[in-house]
Image 1 (cartoon, rainbow, N blue to C red):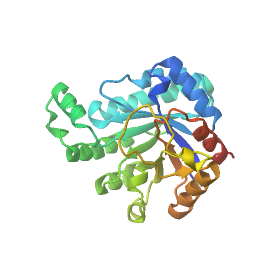
Image 2 (tube, helix red, strand yellow; image 1 turned 60 degrees about the vertical axis):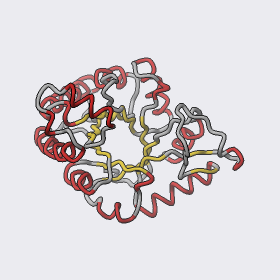
Image 3 (tube, rainbow, N blue to C red; image 1 turned 45 degrees about the vertical axis):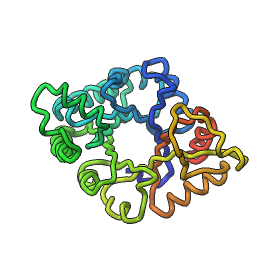
Image 4 (cartoon, rainbow, N blue to C red; image 1 turned 90 degrees about the horizontal axis):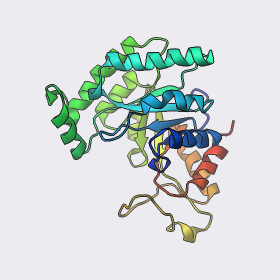
Length: 274
């Protein structure tokens, strides 16, 4: 967990940077230059497997961590442990360092109806262990127990996403951080998250002129889009600091599809300066 209580920022990959090495390297360098701590590379049933780009991304940067999303049903704990162990050994040899720049974001139960149908249809064996949200969450708990037991000195930072009581219980027992959304944030939820750190996913809208708050352009169209954190740079910094102080949260993940992210990058650089 973030023991120093410094505010740190994580970032969720934006597809505007692409999904292959040139764009991912550009993204990684840009985020690192602006003091981003880690970048989440998500998992989708129709997407690429980012893990195969580990060497290129680490070689192109110095400090930023890469958080790879996996779903428990997609591979065994044994194979996942082998992947992370191999990457850890490579880092140790290549850089003669014990610093592990890989992190694991284990997705518990959330699947869209389309993804669930795709996965169930293409499961090689019996899909009955993961064909509902509740089953996937319970399977995730068993998966994590095995994975953590297999990992020793090469255990990556572990992240989970969600806010249900079951997910919180699993995160308290096994993960280093639980990622929650702005809309889920409340004192009752935070009081239940006792043995793991919290990462709050946010989408700040920064405009120096209040009249420009409705002028942002996005890559996707969403009706009734709202930003819970918004205003001038000074106002947004104040709002994030208030959340940090009120809830004891020191890690924030930027999850945005705003086309212009220059102000957000500046915000991250300002607030995460050592």
